Length: 639
Image 1 (spheres, rainbow, N blue to C red):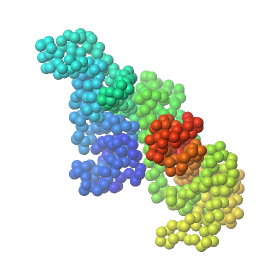
Image 2 (image 1 turned 60 degrees about the horizontal axis):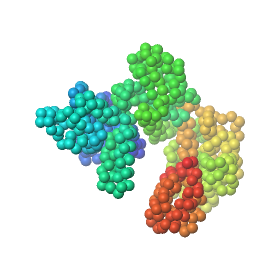
Image 3 (image 1 turned 90 degrees about the horizontal axis):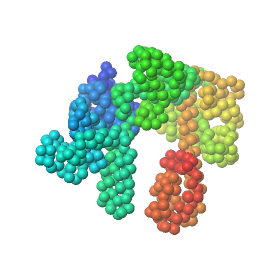
Image 4 (image 1 turned 30 degrees about the vertical axis):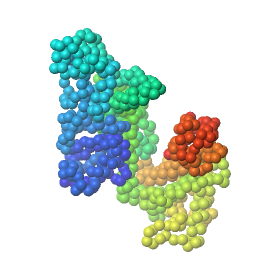
């Protein structure tokens, strides 16, 4: 049996989204399928102390050789996908749910003279329309109880129906209006079947009318101070919406299609394919490939489809892709299949939601591949050796510092420094620089100032005899010099950085290069032409990671400063609003958008605020409504 630690995913690599996970044995067979509201939390529990696990679970994790997961949007989607895959793969360790006993259906017996609606479990029967399965039996029962007031379909058993027919008296449901009482002839068989058809139509997705009516009744009950009635309607509405929750992993039209999502980072491309049969995802596959050229994704889609569909019978009638396809490709696929093949990019609805799920999983797979690539010691050593060879260094650059500049139309200029040691980011060494000496879009001047400050600290620490601690290996402040400096930009930025090193007398001690984004060109000081490293080069990949990390770090700092600047400019002039109250205000509402939408009474509910101060805040934010700020991320968007 395998040791679970041998295939445990790297720490922090499992997403925290809802999803479905699968354990495979050494032969590639699925031995267990499960769902989780939080994939990371659930999967980590399998790799805890084995003695704390149930014996059957211990056997499963020791039999498994790998684990994979698929992310979805909601817990309901995870339940639906888990159900489908248990039926598809019949995993040996899945006892629960194998016979459908834990999944309730909503069934309408359209094959009977008087159709009956009921909630049940088990296998499907001919002549009955099914909806679901659903995650919460109580929710679907509450919904049926609610819908019977609008669509009074028969819900009684055959015995109750026959007794009512023979006695000529309807049951209690008929007396309270939850059944149209076809047993005593209140409606004809045709009229009752029409009611049942309307019920099925609603359950199939035509929900707008009834939901709107219930909402109006709820608001009217609240306005009439009938809060008990409003609460009942609120709970009924919640159950109804829960059952009718958007579900992108089960398509309502019974489609057969392949859903293809692409993720591209410029050096690698990830492809995720969901195989949909009868509207359900019966399987999925993923690929990751290195980019060898600058071809766009439209061309890559053509190459992928030609290789994926080796047999004409593999081609489905519909292909939903995140990338547009050329007409010639569609014609070729249609010719090979012998029937029309529809290749398109859905823009809305459940198909778009399913495509977004495929794209999200492709992106997560790409992140996983990057993490594996970065954490592999052999790969990192190869990357450092390639960088040293390309730049003509005597030895691999064990410490790399990368610099980037971020600003908005020349204002709020900030710089970032990220550090990679032995090919891995060392976040404790990251630094940010606020540039106030000039305004304007001048990246050359900004990079000059940032490097001057960095070099000045290095020289000062050396003169002060600051050394690396022999026990911890930690350098005080900036005393540890880099072996290589990478700047984000082309020849102008590199020459500016070279001038700074030359003035400090560090030109021969610290290597320097620049990485331009457009063509991923590596620039050296004083050179007229750049170095072009191979696309699949591990050295180029390392430089890109450092550059992208510096850009991310600079952007994050810049957004937080911009958000703070806008917030302070709005609230600083409010009389009586100090820093403590301002902080309490923004913590209470969370964003400027919500603060602007709040009423004076709602603002006055913040601790420390009264009606006068709340009115002053409301007047201040109402006069500035041009931007919305997310205070958690620092994002500033136009409203």
